[in-house]
Image (cartoon, rainbow, N blue to C red; front, side, top):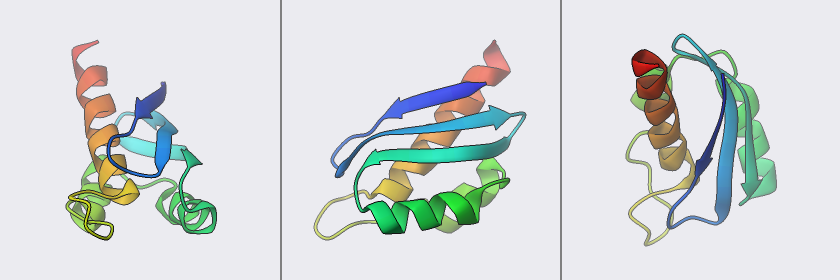
Length: 86
């Protein structure tokens, strides 16, 4: 399933990815720190929801209580929970 998540309190505006079971692929960010987010997307391709959360959940950016990486954790968890109830 392809999924798009609208971010909050970060520079990127949305995150899109594909989820199959609990595996995440084809991650892309709209906006944000282009080079860093492209690198994160490549590194995490094929990781599970739990693996992504274990490494990135709670990561902050400057004074913000969240970051694009933390928002990705929220996005993949939300998508995974929706696939379980569909």
